[in-house]
Length: 195
Image (cartoon, rainbow, N blue to C red; front, side):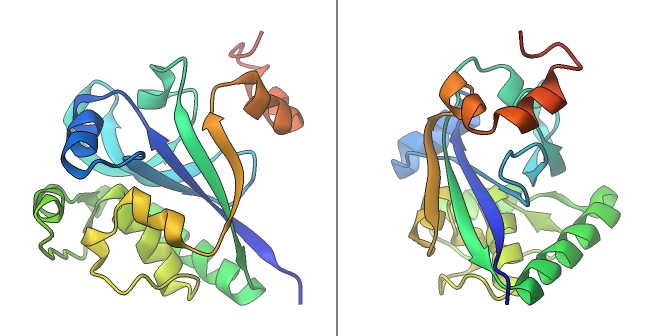
């Protein structure tokens, strides 16, 4: 049976919220996203609906060169590769399709964020933190079990999953882009992002 791969992207931006979480929790990474392809040209998470407004959050499709990530010339991050069976991979696809289809009803779990800072459980079926969402997908697909309430899963906790680090460093660096050059050139040269 062929193994498939799921990619977890952990990042640390320089936003006020990211800095606050880092100070309170002393975490290296403060945001988590999930992708089904190694070049990360489509990532999913919960975050800002509008780039300049940190107070309205929802389910988002992310891009390393747009939105909040687009503000950063340097983006500290780590990319984890997790193995998945065909059945687990199909379950992840199905779950992501459900999130995409219901995206207008899904919101950022602000209460869950406050509770997580004090290690208190706070689950709401239509609200997620970024790492809560990533963990929810992996857990429901049978890929991961961290034995804690999902809103208490921090991006840092995802480093404890059985995975392979395929990149660690500046996700905007030529080293990272070079590693997945064909995919990046194909996507970004057409819009003039890469020179």
